Image (cartoon, rainbow, N blue to C red; front, side, top):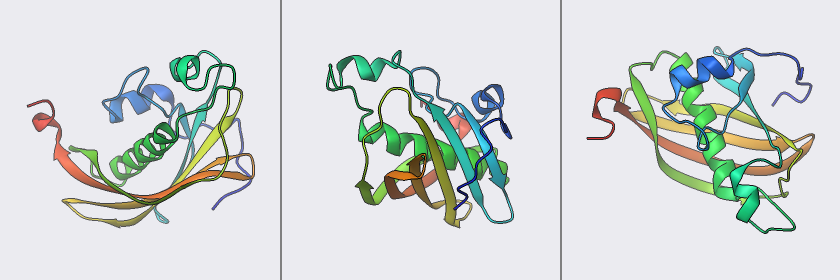
Length: 157
């Protein structure tokens, strides 16, 4: 896992992410990709958290924290970007399972969430990725995420 991330580096922009993932605000949870290594099947996405996030308004008002399920969704979306970049671009990765998830640190407004994801297995039908969400050098959450590939034409039918 890379720990010395250049905060000014952008490998995949927000604009490109919107061409890869079908999600839109407020459900698009990856602002940009700051590292991508296709040979190692490893990606680092970034989510900048501000007080303006809708979930902070109602999730523990007065002491706002990012819902754990949204941290896992951000990891899954980062995995979707990775599989797209690895050549599975005619399909969309759809969440299938979450295993061994653990939440270690609260994520609050002002944090920068780094989403480290690497492929455990990928095939034409789907696969598994491992993810760790970090705030600075602190582990916020981790999980193994299973996904299935669905043809883009089949979404919404």
